[in-house]
Image 1 (tube, rainbow, N blue to C red):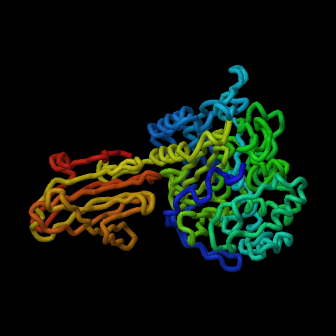
Image 2 (cartoon, rainbow, N blue to C red):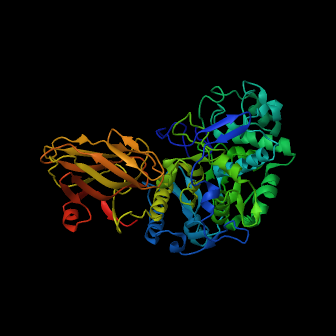
Image 3 (cartoon, one colour):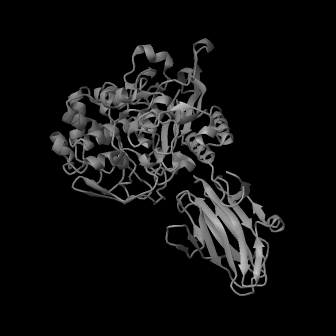
Amino acid sequence: MSAGTTGDDRQIGSRPTRRQLGRTALALGGALAITPFPAGPADAATSATGASASGHPTLRYGAPERAGLLPAHLRQLVADAEVFLGPSPKHPWYAGAVLLAGRGGTVALHQPLGMAVRYQAYDERTDTGVEFPAGQQIPMAKDTVFDLASVSKLFTSVLAVQQIERGALELEGKVAAYLPEFGGAGKQDVTIRQLLTHTSGFRAWIPLYSAPTYEEKLQLIWDEAPLYPPGSTYLYSDLNLISLQLVLERITGHALDALLHDEVTAPLGLRRTRYNPPASWRPRIAATEDARAPWSGLDRGLVWGEVHDENAFSLGGVAGHAGVFSDAWDLAVLGRTLLNGGAYGRARILRPESVELMFTDFNTAFPGDEHGLGFELYQHWYMGAMATPRTAGHTGFTGTSLVLDPSTDSFLIVLGNSVHPVRTWRSGSAPRVAAGTNLARAVPVRPPHGRTAWFSGTASATTATLTLPALDTASAGPRLRCALWWDTEPRSDVLVLESTVDGGGTWQPVPFTTTRRGSDPQEHPAGSVTGWSGRRWYRLTADLPSARRLTLRWRCTTDRLYVGRGAYVDGLRVETADGVLFDEARPADRARVEARGWTPSAD
């Protein structure tokens, strides 16, 4: 990792912070009061398939239909991922990838693509990769092992939450209480929670690899002063999880790699997950970067079978922020464990309430940077349409990602070697976004009436409209009724109900009310909705303007960046005191609807 990069593939400040939905958590003296929230990890698991004798779902392969997924969208997930093996836009985003997706206890997709080892070097003069001879290149396989980079932070976080659960660590405890050396340079008030949620004030990273000895590396951390007062700012930093590693090793008396084995990988049977894989694993490991200055902090040549991150390498390959190697299946087991509320088969590594802490937004003061303990939440920039206020995940600089959606009990692993042969060939998270959106589309949205509903689609930088024919609403009490479902990127992508009385010259918003059984009505005075509706259909009513020729339309607008799952409208009906003016259930009326960008969908 060179100067200016964080432990995953984000530049600090490179993405907008425009999302503000989530749960409220109140930390008081190390205890947490959690607001009730439907479909938590433990709850979602109760309906999953593939349960073991102990009642905790385990994974097995099965058809998409068994998982309640639509096969066409899984096929599209693979097709879209294959595109990024080619110019994206100039160079491949990755040399290869392994995709794994499923729901409940069923793995419905497990697909390798491209090459695990393709290049032996990078030629910076021509900006080309120097390929191995064809006979020495290694294709991706389902069990290819990847350097997870910052996805490693999730394992460190699980280990920390275990210690919180056992009472050895307090969430609101001061780091310096466990690690006195840490307390200098203005860090005396930094808490364990702030390390786990990246609110300690630490800068993104420092070059620990520049210090020759382990003791001198630690001294750099002891001497490091926060850029911001602890708790005042969100700033993603590798130093948070490195510091947490030091706390865990101090309070347990065990090295981090031993803790990982004893507390996580051995109980869950993760046979392909560890720090510092042995040389015998090398043919099954995806190669990473031709690491040389100026893009790398260390001159190492082709990094293959050793950790890519320079700081983790300098720490002996075992670090809290990076260094774990794993394959897609093992990551899926970890994900299934957390969606189960901390158990897998007969093994339990966390209690359900501990998992809740990992899926609870502690960063409500920092909209757009929602974060549980270790897990990022509600991040459209790599989760795509899978993002909800409860969707948890993480990315890694080498091209890896894990996304868990408790609301649909689904999981997605995208493992790519995107720094092979050099980190500068890829930018952004387009393959992850595409995969997340396709998996979200694979979870059906069933219309409340009939077989199809109008669907806005999930394209970015698009306006879709659904327009009813002109109606005479001059009679008393004109009203629109329909069913509405929406999930859009908050504030950026908006669904609006509007009307015109001059043939489309001017449009005015139409206020409406949404209701669902067991909940209070919600007023929408601006005639619009945005964000996440909870994957539920709502009944909509709207009092309409009185006019001889009133035209109604729905307009769904997305920006150029990220999208949610989209919007659905079903069962449109306009009536007055004198009778029904329009009813979507009547074929003749339905034929008069004009849709631009909208499509009838049975999803």
